[in-house]
Length: 522
Image (tube, rainbow, N blue to C red; front, side, top):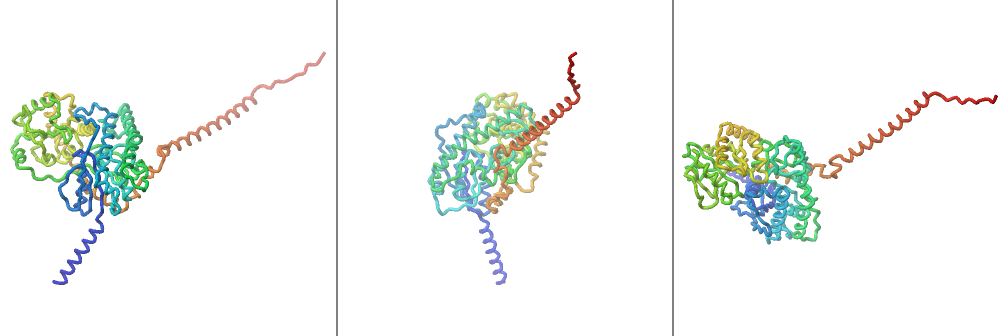
């Protein structure tokens, strides 16, 4: 018995030593003050902490205490920016929106990097990190931490990513069949759509390279004011060891992927938890079903134009189904008896209830992933960003109806709801749900595996694409094309000279000879 106890203590000690050996020090930075972005980022950092890694997170969000996780909460001070009513943001256009986002990103960088605890990390001499995790969204200034701590870079994109993000890891992005996230095209594009897609994607690439990166580089150097020189940010960003994107080919479109660009779409979705008692009762006692309505965390219901709000209210009052509406203020004038409001609602858990028949949404990617995990059809009202792309895919796949915000009337809302409640939409949603969930590992398990893989293999340089070492003219084989064109031209010219010489020779030999006769004098 004593011997058995000794072996048990020895085994426990070995397990503890192994656990300690594989435990990594990870620094995560997310500066975007958007709840949806934080949900994706926090899903991974929290899980890494639960698995025994020691994680330090810098973010603008408070966190519940988690063992192994230290949270440095940073207040975002966004000065000199006109934050628009997001219902009007589509009027800004691609150029205006991208410049606005890049400028906000600079303010976020300054707010984080000047924080005393962050400055203490920047100038520390005794800290060590095995990986630096950064949100891949206007946060390139934080890559200075990777140089300081000589740690691999892991970037997490809260959506499917852009062409210029693919450039960080040498990933191809043919504009001929990969639509840009801010456009509403499918992967089968007309000539005009391919032209617009190419111009839009290259504009973002050029703006990122010559407008955003130099300004991010400047602010990085301002706060990483150490004696050791830091390489250019354009070089640091191309040292990204791993890019995790919140995407999956079943919810978007297939595309080529380098081994260090991993799709982990839906990694924030957890198994459904028990609902609050009042919500559980409301959903259980709805024999005709419930329509869940939420425009996400950014689009506040109280800021919705009055005409659109009244159209929804009148349409809802004519339904036999109940409506559960995420509404952020105390009251809603004209609220019908079949509508229940909630300032905050556990969306993913609500969508798991069998009585939820339809999700009216802005078409945000996280909302779409949660709905399809549960097999719930969508009625989408896209406003900005990738919402149009998400809903266009839902329409093409047969599990969603798209209603443009400009076209909202009582009749259009009723038509859209009645159409989306048809059985075929739910059947298609459940079919796509089965495809989406048919993966060898859950999205979160994949994200954890590849994060630990990069840490284990010291940045996994064997996954780095040689495309990153090529000049642009080499990557597009322009030098090869030029050499081939010159060779073909040179050979063609030589053949032309030979043919011309032969032609002259033949012509001269076949022409009649002129006889020169000397006339004799008589």
